[in-house]
Image 1 (cartoon, rainbow, N blue to C red):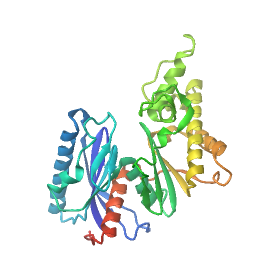
Image 2 (cartoon, rainbow, N blue to C red):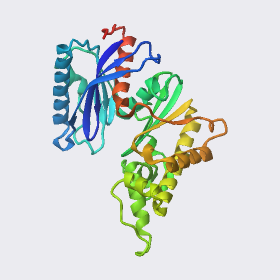
Image 3 (spheres, one colour):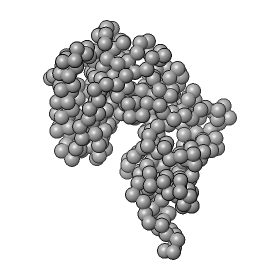
Image 4 (cartoon, rainbow, N blue to C red):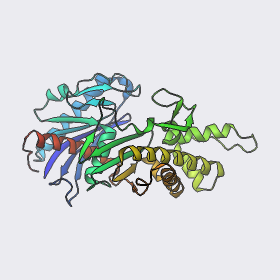
Length: 333
């Protein structure tokens, strides 16, 4: 077994941990995550500051590993934005992380360690983790969809993350949906993407929009989160039930289209919104069935198994593949 130092860099926090992977890949044993810690992203302080604090955290984690006699074989990074895995540069990032675009991550880590480093996108890492060791293990083609604050995706083929010609393959939230028409997407369009009406934030916005269309006598108080929509639906509120069902059905239709294009063995759905309950899942599967081709309809839609550890495990899987592909015999844990 090999142990890697992993990072999950998000808009709210940066998580880190030691991930010990079983060998061979996709064996019966499960990965183990230890020495978890995190720091706030504090995005407003800028990309330079964030990079410096991540490297400082890495130095602390490597010191901890040395003190505990843990041999670290490499460093895996799941990064927000669109990273270039070959150069270690963040080639694109949204305004959620100002100054993150253009950061040279590999160069920064080289100042503190000679260990090999591999960086992939955070949503891609989540998908790679689930495909390798979670709900998609032992499947050749896995489509992973994350439905949380936003919506992202990853395509894993025969154990390898498919990133596309420009590193943006898997942006599942930015596919067309009539339900999203007029709602502002995080990518800047109002032309009808699924993310602004089916993510956690989208559920809130869709609910509050429909609230405004009701008469004063029938109008409930607005919600502050998608979780509140799910809670009201569970209590039987008609508006919340219709919003949850319409949103999930539209997302299911989009996933059906993705299934038609990719033809995966399994579709893994993860993120906070998957906890919305049976109404959400039933509508999601109904939308998928309505949209999927006959040969794609039987494709199972399953809930992810790794939870918050998925990006850390996926980042470790990425560096493990890199180490082995380049004949760098990993240290044994």
